[in-house]
Image 1: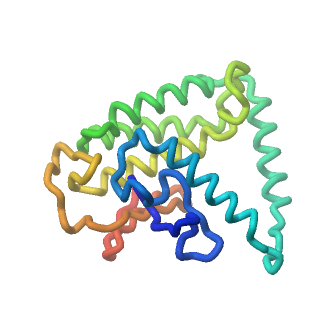
Image 2 (image 1 turned 90 degrees about the vertical axis):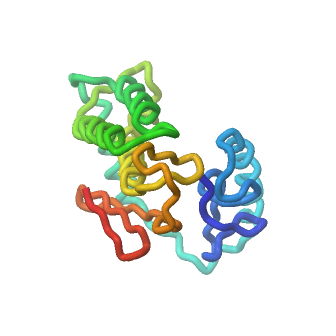
Length: 205
């Protein structure tokens, strides 16, 4: 909870990079109540949008994303043409919600986190071959793989953080550990999730 430090206009210390919503540490500090997220997202989004609209970005070249757009369009057409699979998109999204609730609740432990990771890894392995469920909006089908990967990254970071802090309670590590008083940074490359704890301590899975 919380996140990047921002100025009043929600710009970070990196020029032209803005942080809004839950990724920003703002009025409620770095450990706010979850119920404030909608209000903060609406307000910070409006503030950032007004500031961005006034900026002159003319010195910057507009990047060419045509190749990426073409590749993603082909991927979307493949998803739409899938005829048979074991699970529809809606089922996997529902199962993901259960996994995150049961295995990554406010109170969690190593066993539950590993169980959640194992379950999500399975759904990631079949997500590219799911069938299009006409009862589910196309954007939910298209975004399913990315959502699964983000959920997996969240579980991986929680598994590596062996302490309790704020709304993060580890039953097997109930105390706050000073060794973890910094941000966890995770990257995904070549099928590997890599957590860097800012003290030359790396973890791969």
